[in-house]
Image (cartoon, rainbow, N blue to C red; front, side, top):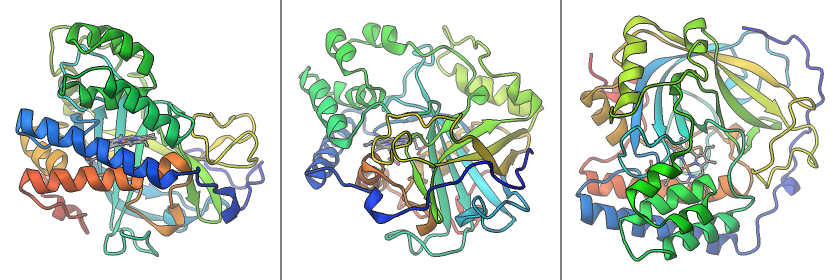
Length: 372
Ligand code: HEM
């Protein structure tokens, strides 16, 4: 792992006035929660399954370990990364739609990482937990400038059809920032396929980003998870055959982890300038030439069955990931992040109420009940 002994940049210390809630942010939050609720209720009635409103389909459910780097410079030795240590993790790779689509509809990917057994002062409503979640997608920015813009996009798409099953897709479209395309296309599955658009590449070769910032102890940062083992790196941009293979991505992840383990680096990009690295607007990519990503930890996952029904019951159904499960030192920042708090809580509560199993954040890896 390439480790800095001293940083070439000067990160900006966090100050509360850097956070500027949008006017009527509370109303936006209510709007999002009620739209999500409608989506969940609708799909529950239609499908009889309580799925995530987005990122419903998983492709790999991995267990592994996160090792915090030793001898980090003080600016990087913050929060979870303050001291060297080893933690069990689970990882869930997914694609964005709230429907279980066939994989030849190629769409952006997500990766949720749950670090287990983390001690320290916690975020409100996460006090009884011992996890630190990082919820990432394979792009460096979020589609909307503000929560308000995101909600109006979502409402616009949802209003373009009276077909209730389209609602979940509407959320996916809005998250991808392609409302106008969705509006033009209507709701049929052929149109959805055309909208796929994401190159059919291997999800294990991708880099994943927080897109929106978090507190990083005294500073502010965006987070990236980057594949670094040669076998994973060889998958970057590798085309994957998904045509006619509805679960092609799961099959590809299983094929990889049957023969190899994987290694990733957790990297952080510290905010050095609010003008070019805004906190409130997650649609702006922070320039790496001004502030590069620095490695703070490594994640390793051994050879394993990457996806199987039993793992799916343990992780897809009984776990929820949220950037608001974590340490006070990593409080999510900015409008999109603040809105995610109520949205994820409401979605997970719905899944818990309707899925017949309460969701508890694990204190140890054994609490996840993975198949042995
Ligand atoms: C206001 C903006 C957003 C809203 C309303 C939203 C909403 C949601 C909801 C409701 C879920 C399902 C949660 C559950 O039932 O457990 C979810 C999952 C997810 N979201 Fe978001 N999201 C937003 C922004 C983002 C951003 C900025 C990212 C990443 C950069 C992201 C990545 C993900 C991923 C990877 C998952 C799947 C988590 C898992 O595997 O359980 N979302 N989102």
